Image 1 (cartoon, rainbow over the protein chains, first blue to last red):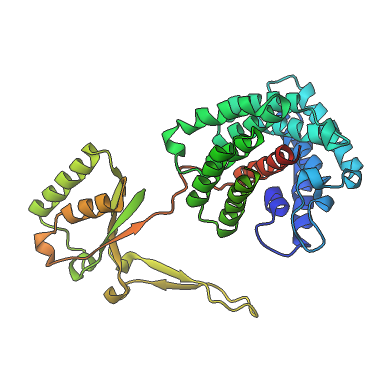
Image 2 (image 1 turned 120 degrees about the vertical axis):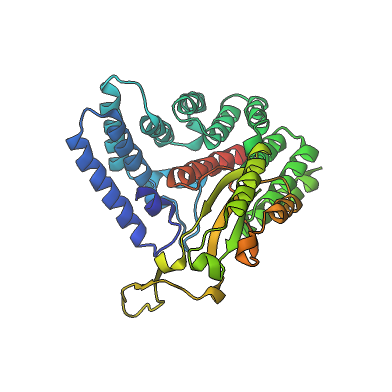
Length: 224
Length: 147
């Protein structure tokens, strides 16, 4: 319910905050009913922190604004504080961290950084590592690869992506070559990056996404 | 890539007449060869459309109208499905080859087969959690590019 409100696959813009609000309300109710369950606090924390960015993640004409370009001064401090408190409550139960608690921790890392440059990427990389232990999934690995690239070097991020590439079940997963392309581009390996973007473009059925990928491929060419 | 081999209904299947022993044995053998080749995902037969139910939602945005519920039988001309076999193969040609090998029940007086390719999602389900993580990935990649 929260994700539907947050990522807004459809519906009017006024519906979205309402959906998030209602999900958050239900989460808070649940936390009082199951106070000894760390994952409930983790989920509430995650929703509170994500909600704090709700106002800043969409431009005037409804276009999405990515985290880096959001005006952090407009993030809702009250919701962040509530989120951090819920996170603390979940952690103090002293049980091992589940997926929600870990995702809330990651979200908290961004919330605590007053500027994007202050983001604690080493911590985020470690949290994704932990998340991939409790909830193994290619998308978690890809996130980890980028976090590792930010914290240390895209060389190490690339190693993580390459490990995924040998997985036969992922051979049609377009996000793999797409992320690989970005990492290679960062390393200045433009020929290889271009090939990856083109490969990713051929794999996706989403027209908008394909255009973006082909644009990235031409960008590589221009920089050569 | 996955293909669904749909066996279209006939007057026989609609009347609930099962293929004879010989035909059933041929079908069993066919499924075994699919299984041995490692391409069989699922195979099921459907009951006649007289046991079916259709629900239609009419596109009337002005008035909320209840869904229309209809019970079978439905007309054969509408291309009813009598059974399906789901296979996973490397190429379309391979799927057609397998489809051509499907035994024709002698007792059925001919039948039609339709092949449909399934959307590929390579086992990655589009659940909300997944979408949320993809949004996180987009945020991180953006920072990597600009950083």
